[in-house]
Length: 595
Ligand SMILES: [Ca+2]
Image (cartoon, rainbow, N blue to C red; front, side, top):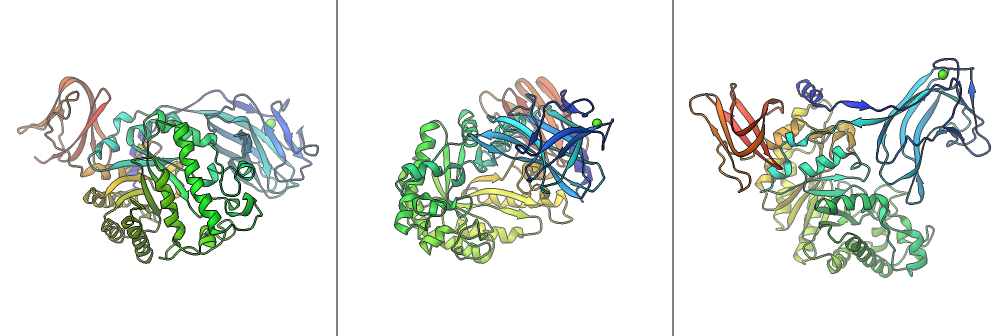
């Protein structure tokens, strides 16, 4: 069970969703906008045999492949917008019916799924879902299909509406990046589609000063097989800039958002052809000598492509090598393809030992721009045997001058690991003397855990991070809001639907914010004076300001606007966070009232 109190307060804070006029199809008189999917075989027609509403529905028959079905096209479906689909489907046998989108990106079709419906024979079943259409895609359509290739089915009362979300005012949330400015960067990770909504862009710019692209700089996104075969001379893999990569890099460059590059050398999300003779999908595995040249050229080509196209982009760190150790052991992965044997590494197939890691750092050092730091990144980094393996590797790399630091991914759960076990790893890594970045932090709720349990673990971790602030340059969450997390069902982040959860308030709780704060900067003079005789707190500022007072559960106690000065009355003992905003600046104070 989650904290009901907190959920209630979050619900009250949600933006109200409005719905523009959308598309509605009752199939009573026509099926304009709809077509048959499945050339020459599939048919669609109005039918009075079955209907959810009215007298008719759309009947889809003569299918012979899973992807055959009915599609919808209308200019109402546009790139960069969010849509809610809803409809009813019917079949005379049990089956799964799927609703998906199709659109073209970089000249090839993409087929993201919107929703699945488990249809029971002779029962109309609702199929509904929400989806963001990324920017810069074209030829958009929605379609219904079934994994039962020959299934005939009916569709009725189908609607599509654009989701118009009210913009969230993030100025009421204490900015994490500003609060921790004297400690470390606060980062997040996002894919191109995640940053499509304006609210997500605003949230990232308000709270974070480091962004890691979720997928857009991984080898499978950048490697170009066709160009590598034609122009790669077997040793020089060619790279490309996909639309999704451009979207994220452009966002960071235009907003002066520092970026973490992720990742050059990894066993996963790296196509098998990259390791094969002639860059062929069925080629024999290349030698170490050839792979060394490919690795060096790949790193060189990616860095050149990015710096040429985004000269003002600040990539301040790169994960050079990622996840070379076994899942929970201090030894390298088994040889093989990760696409056929989960967890296997073609790097290990070619090199047989960890020398490819050393080579990767050696090559990266030749091409990485001045000032950009190089990291070894891994997960389950707190499990003792794996921890010790990572420690030995990074210590050696660091002492050889090849590596600047270690990335602790920190994908955790409220039930494992213990904060103490996690701290042991961090302390051990800190003893290397290298920098540490917390690169992918999230904490899923274990069975029965509450938001309060999660919040306490976040707080305990941040206490450790603050203690080791001299070693740590970044604490990054893997994602923005729970809804878009790769572990969404575990609700692992400090924000949900753009609103702070208990974890957020516990993270900021013990920041050393004075109740008496002298001038913070020339253009933002704010003073806060608690009265010694009554329950007032006086805020004075040189210009108009907005103030908000929160209790430690994250509930807004009061807020207001003032010119020059204001008295805030706090009648209940306890700890509070006072946020004062003037212009584009925000200053926060922790206030403890004990009278
Ligand atoms: Ca109907």
